[in-house]
Amino acid sequence: MSIKPPLTDLPIKTASKGFYEGFNTIVTVGSKILVGLLIIWAAAFPVKAGAALSVVSGLLLKSFGTWYIYVMAFYLLTCLILAIWPTTGRIRLSAEGEGPEFSTFSWFSMMFGAGIGIGMLTYATGEPIYHFATNPDVIMGKMAGESPEVVRMAFKWSFLHWGMSAWGCYALTGLALAFFSYRRGLPLTIRSGLTPLFGRSLSGWLGHSVDIVAVIATVLGVAVTIGFGVSQFSSGLYNITGSDWLMTPEGNPTTLAMILALVVIMGLSTLSALSGVGKGIKWLSNLNMGLTFFFLAFLLVFGSTTFALKALFVGMWDYLLALPGMMFTVWHPDGTETGDALAKWQGDWTIFYWAWWIAFAPFVGLFLARISKGRTLREYVLGAMIVPSLMCFIWFAMAGGTAIDLELNGGAGRAILNAGLSSQLFATVNQLLSPGLAAVMSALLVVLLLTYLVTSADSAILIINTINAAGDETPKGRAHIVVWGLALTLVISALLLAGGLSAIQTAMIIGALPFSFVLALMGVALIKAIWRDALRDRQSADAGTEAATALPRAK
Image 1 (tube, one colour):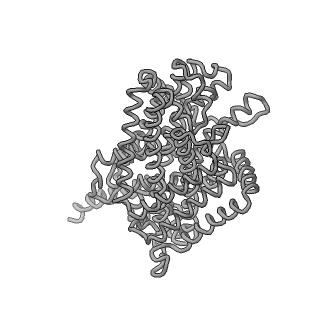
Image 2: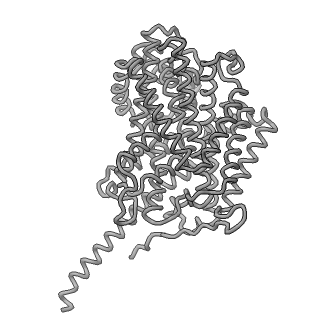
Image 3: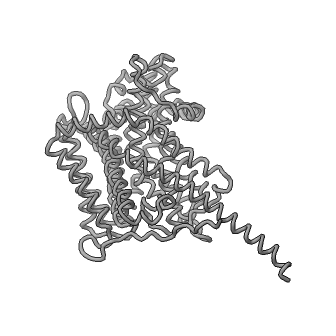
């Protein structure tokens, strides 16, 4: 039985004139309505909205926590198996005869840039120092918190959250988009990744719904990233100026400080997006890359280099050995102190992270697909999953290792441990340098944060418009850039008023769930497409053999 040829055309209707010219009006307007309703609800009823989001998020974590754990394992294993398998690893993400669009050096540089961002600056110190105090091994009584023995476990659990599982989620999204766009000629938008399962029905409401889910997930995923960023930005300003209005007595940035910082940052982001990828975004990317290398060099010279390098290599060893068990382990509340504590830790850390990465996957995955045309599948997984993971490990080892060493051996006196999450990087700098030099380094870190915040937000605006425009990457009208810049600002502001960063996190966990199902189906669709391509090749080869065998008989 002959296998039908793959779908190579997926028409998506876009407006031919008017304000929404070039956009799919259902996806664009539908996304705006949902985002607008969230803004109005959170702004008009902040207390009720915060409470309701918390309740719904708690129910979802209880009902779907296990799903998040297992589906992230599926994303990771799908990418690894496809890359390792000899025939699938050689598949090129382009049409026949097309090579890579970018040089290997440029491509790896962009992958490196994707691996370092706002979350890295916030958590590279904060997460290892937290797990140094408590982690599942400490909760189970295997070792004491804040002891030399627990250092290895602190990095093992930190690497779990920032390693191959996170990048496997991004890599699968980008791999599906690149495969169907560059090998099948389909639009570079999320719905194209489901064509082997749903076919031409994705031109209609089903496809529109998928793209709307991707837009909402992107908005909420970016909201969390920017929310953490403005919190740390405000902490940095406090570390430089000492102005009391920037910080609460508990050591957390005030809501006013974060909203004012947000307005400034989103204004700059919108201006950058208006200038286009070739101008504002490219210039800012070059600036933050230079500042990133400068800060890494600072940590190598002034930080706890020996301690950090040991933490890096031993931590990676522990992580790789424990990864199969960690990525499938699920803890449920069982009424015991230990069981309940483990379940709470996993919900606060692992499941939160998995939801965050899934929400961010449409944004990062589309970026990875755009720069990976012409690469083999194996090259792509190496560049999109392994290299960024290594960069995350290096950052965590250098920043987190220095912080832990200062607490263990450097006389920090719990100054870093007792600081808020957004302040711990600056607390580490304060321990390494004199007050004057610490203020200068803090100012450089604030500038670095600003560049990451602006590039993340303006890139998100452009990606949202690409999805809304059925995968069309050509420059969009200025008004659409301004509208989505304003929408992101209002979403983050409204959720900050409704409950601070925790409200943004709970909204993101809710928004990520639908896309987790979409991405799982994209993985299944990709496997099906590759399998059917192999069957077609086999049938074609068999037909050629039969024809060659029959030719002498005809003579």
